Image 1 (cartoon, rainbow, N blue to C red):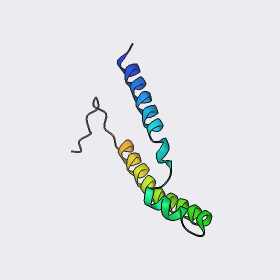
Image 2: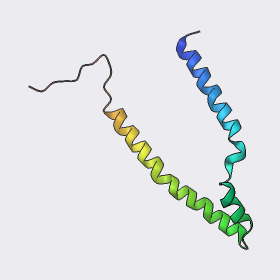
Image 3: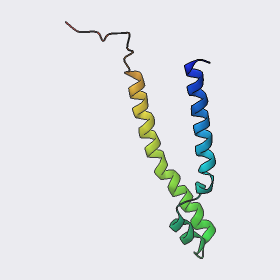
Image 4: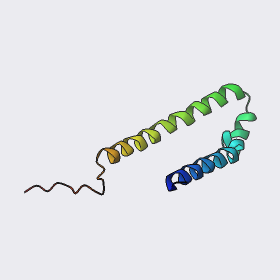
Length: 86
């Protein structure tokens, strides 16, 4: 089996293990979950808390995608030397 095939199988196995181990942590942190569960308006507060988590996630993902795009666009393959300006 080629080396890239072995690496792909290992990455898939690692992702599967992480997803299976993270299943109980799909909720918020323990303190946030308890404060939402014990409040009088639990359902609306829970939906607002989930929306707040998504709102805070958007800028982080946007910055990551932006930096990845810049790095991908200006990548320099090993076999090509950068052009020198004279």
